[in-house]
Image (cartoon, rainbow, N blue to C red):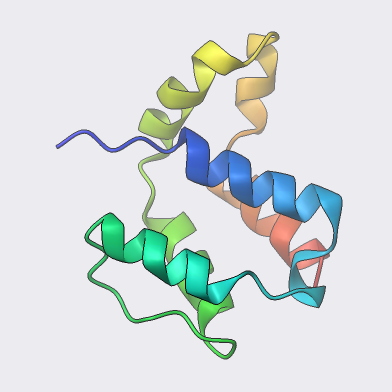
Length: 96
């Protein structure tokens, strides 16, 4: 099974970049509908659990595959070194 990580990672980072992630709640109806369409087998996301689910999902990503997915969209490939689980988690924690 091929898993593409570019769009979810890009969307998450764009959301974090535009306003602090932990001072906002995503559109949970839209997000849960999207998860259902992609055969998500995890829990429905709620105001109380979405942050933990995002953290768990980030930790489960195969980051080498994510980097391969992102590579064609970056002008400077040196930026790929920044795409790590630790960096993304730190960015999310910073915005708490």
